[in-house]
Length: 154
Image 1 (tube, rainbow, N blue to C red):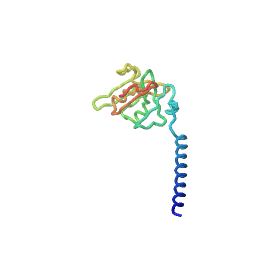
Image 2 (image 1 turned 90 degrees about the vertical axis):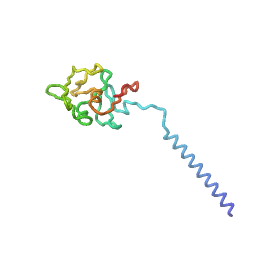
Image 3 (image 1 turned 45 degrees about the vertical axis):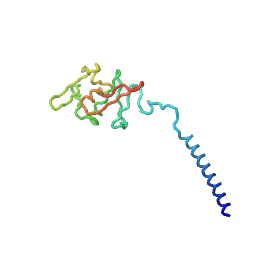
Image 4 (image 1 turned 45 degrees about the horizontal axis):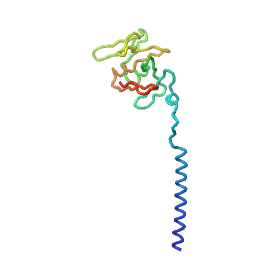
């Protein structure tokens, strides 16, 4: 009797293990990573000259940067609100004002940065700041990427 019980338990355990292995194999085949590449513009919800903006490794919902002439620009309203409140856009005089402890810095659309690109651009009723300008006056690390991969770390 004892031998029969041992044989039955061994058969049942073997069947359960085989069923578990089969279920594991089926689940692996269903949920394994694929080699299919995701459409990055859909993933980041950015297209054309738009760029996704991340703050503290999290994508900022409703905030898009602009990729203009090989440079990344950020909206001045968002920079003022989320990154550095010392950036102020003077609508009346169409100039950017940045306050330092010992001076006040002014810039307009004709002001060029060290890269030879404008420090700010006005498009579609929005003012865009050059990302390197933001990193120069703010203790942040900015990394930009394009379709070819990594382009700049500030």
